[in-house]
Image (tube, rainbow, N blue to C red):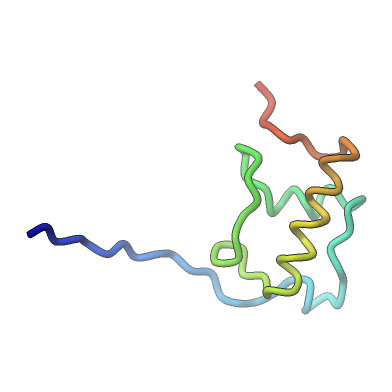
Length: 78
């Protein structure tokens, strides 16, 4: 019988930066959106970013919109 070790996840505190500033994620704010994208081009999840569920959904939609408008890259630069 195999035993599995549980990994400890490093969770950030649930302090939504959009709720604090009373702002919404917008596709044209590339500097703000790029903070929530990894260097590989993946969108950072709620566990690591600390954003509430409502703003995470809107952030994802804004990042995808910015990608389609060529404001953010789909893939990392080689």
